[in-house]
Length: 87
Image (cartoon, rainbow, N blue to C red; front, side, top):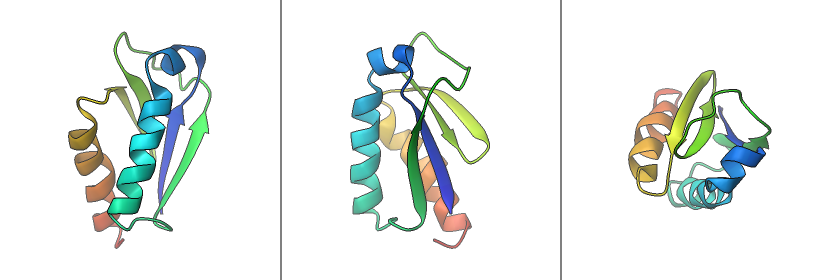
């Protein structure tokens, strides 16, 4: 199971956390990862960045996730992790 927590604290909310949640839900569905990826929201992860949203995948924290870099982020940090874990 890949655990994905999206910061929905005030700073990340203003930077588009809702957009990132929607993109994640869509990508999880499109890649048949339901039941493999657990998606949740969380308040501040403590790694605020000037640009983008903070997302934690398992124990790794990623900062600066935006609509523009989402596809690369998802492929490298969620899809590849899910494949390694046996999807």
